[in-house]
Amino acid sequence: MDGKRILITGITGFVGGHLASHLLEKHPEALVYGLRRWRSPDENVRHLMHDRRVKFLMGDLLDEASLRRAVDQADPDYVFHLAAQSFVPYSYSVPRVTLDVNGVGTANLLEALLAHRDRTGKDPVIHVCSSSEVYGQPRPQDVPMNEDHPLRPISPYGVSKVTKDLLGMQYWVTHQLKTIRTRMFTHTGPRRGPVFVLPAFALQVVEIEKGLREPEIRVGNLDSVRTFADVRDAVEAYRQLVLKCEPGEVYNIGGNRTMTISEMLDIVIGRSSLESRPSIVVDKALLRPTDVTLQIPDMSKFQDATGWTPQYTFEQTVDDTLDHLRNVIYANV
Image 1 (cartoon, rainbow, N blue to C red):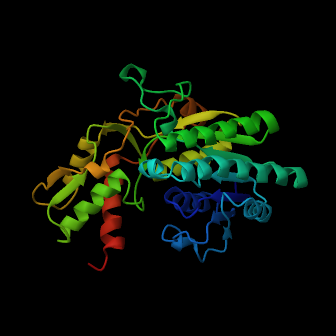
Image 2: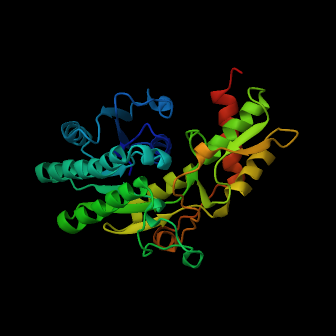
Image 3: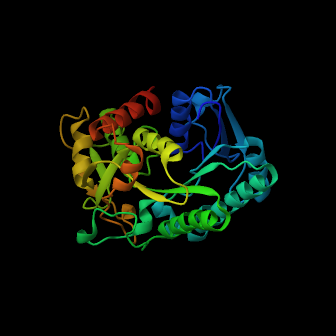
């Protein structure tokens, strides 16, 4: 990948910022082009702003002209399509926006890449980032889930990711665009937004540590079962994906630590400096209309193809998330 041109959509997002840094660390001679909207916050990429190997391109998945300009400027050898409306609860409030961004936006990007290939002959490897939410709610006997598990999404977000996923497959079958799809399970770590479960708990813990709130943690459904991965393991998986995996295929990726949200909360509290356990309060506003409560991946297909295994322990993920909040977000408190 050294000397190659890489396009990352959604570079200002949680995963996008980590991915750009990781690729440049592994491939110092690479050139990274990051698609961002003009109104996107930059806290996840501030450390990249003065790196001459990174060029930010203004564009929007729903603006076809801007996508074509960005693809032509990037002239990529590799594409990581991460841009999305990625917050499941928000999708219930704005289902059309979610479907447009994740579905129509993906079609727009693939059309731009197809047109660029027709003009230039450039034929990049394209990572289409789907989600474990496409599987919906499995039965206990159906886990761990492999890639042949039926797609039964139960949220507008899940439906939008099925659209994104199947568009990736269709553009390979119809046009031979070299798309490779991933269905990533729960991933988290430092710089994750506080609307997601681990940073939401960690943020409240740090605020209690610093005396900014009463010793109370507000929670949603604590009985859900999740398999957690660290974002730094996820971006290494994505790097290996485009180097080693087969176009047209789909791969489950996730961590190797499965637990209930309640057990996860206990670990966060246990890794904090709190001397006594806060009270736990269920907030109805944090409960979803429908909820996937069991997510355990079968990753054997991806691991057989790449040899990748997670390197970060969940405790390290928690420690680094807490430290980021203490030392960056609340550094002056």
